[in-house]
Length: 96
Image (cartoon, rainbow, N blue to C red):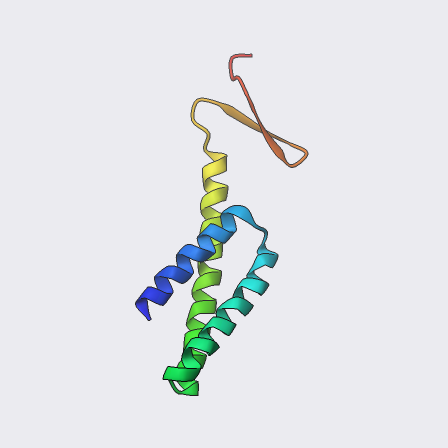
């Protein structure tokens, strides 16, 4: 269960770096299908449901953490001034 949590957090953080929040819906669906397929042969229904819940929650927490890290990282450009223009970040020389 610990490995599942770590993988869920890392996968969520990676998804936050590349995609918008809507990607969590299909990602959670994929997690549920994989957990059902894996748990159907080896575990009881309650353990399979717990696996789905843990994987889904860690995926979403990882997404939020990754999004916060991305926001924090993009706002701290060293030695350069960043200006947000129409949704894009343009870096300008601070001496000009």
